[in-house]
Image (cartoon, rainbow, N blue to C red):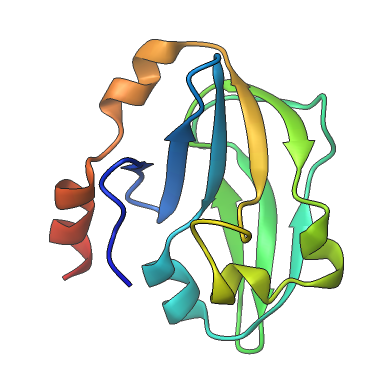
Length: 126
């Protein structure tokens, strides 16, 4: 799977989609889900929680390991992907689509500029 060029990325393997309305959608990259293997559980914090950049907003549990999820920017969680509760494998099957994790209201849009482009992200994963 290619790395979508319309998204931003973190060195911790989260992706960020700017929804254009002061919110972002966040998930983990195809590289990350591939490294984790079969995902069996996703735990996310409830909407209404405020995060600072690099705070842990949840965990992904795979057959072999558990990995923390890190907020790529400052903001408030406004929505969770509730489908992941019953179908965590969506993260493996469609990491950039149906496997999204949270939506956040952006506190500082300037932070989006500090995230990696698709090319920069590919450089650290290849």
